[in-house]
Image (cartoon, helix red, strand yellow):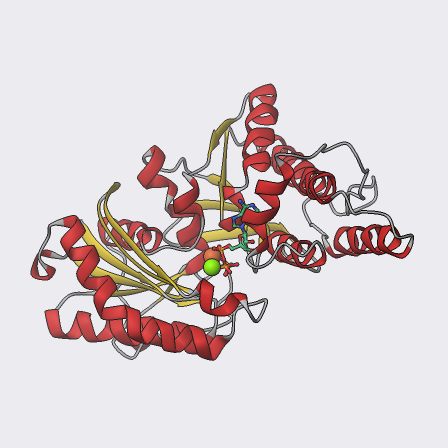
Length: 347
Ligand code: ATP
Ligand code: MG
Ligand code: FE
């Protein structure tokens, strides 16, 4: 099926077009530069930027894919979770296109889309799929027997998300926003073993598949403050590398453990933090050692984009899932277990 997907949950206006598992277009307009001076995404600024970027980005995606809107088999859109006002722009646009073109509309979960996007990179997902989802707002281990209808959380962060920790540590180090890519870059010049930062929730009595990154973030901030207080220079690259090492260590250790416990032969890693080079390298090594096949999409498909929403939409169409109603709501706190927002008439 030929599907156009719209993503506006945060600061990326993404429009992707796929045919089945084939990526035809991935147009992204980001308002990240407009937020940088505030040190974080400003919801109202994001909503306005989505509004301005929406139609041009849809046109760009159709051009790039070389398809006509009338040829589409469906339109999918991120219905949640995310920023309420930002989601509303995408959902409203998707409804308008679906209605005007007479195409079925699929309101889907942003988190399931972060997983499903890997079909564009590595073909059909194994069933069940074991997924480590690590992004700006989430850090979870998920088991999905069917990505269009069934996503089960095995564990999640009890405080900060991994991406949030990257962003906060980057701020402490004065590396700007967004922090993930900046830390990744700095860490290349640093020693990952320079400082031993804490690995949260890895004790024998701790929950096996939950995460905690707020203690790590505080430990990094304290370490840096102490150096500054003593008038010593802060070895930014070493701090970045050592922090990144702690995050990658915990994430990969728990993910591999989950695969072993559940008998999963594959591990998928998705979400913005999956773009991290150290996480990718460590996961590769540890999965290989454990005989697990690792699936991580290329970095551009890990951060927010429309192709991931189109990928899940195409799977919904292929499996004959019920489309959403045209009064589809945007749900800023849509739970990860709700893969799509079904026809309201079924309630
Ligand atoms: P969510 O999917 O939970 O709603 P999100 O939509 O805000 O989160 P994503 O694009 O999925 O955003 O992820 C963004 C996060 O990924 C940010 O916290 C960013 O710092 C982080 N990130 C991006 N690239 C990297 C990288 N190379 N290394 C580490 N973190 C990264
Ligand atoms: Mg973003
Ligand atoms: Fe995301």
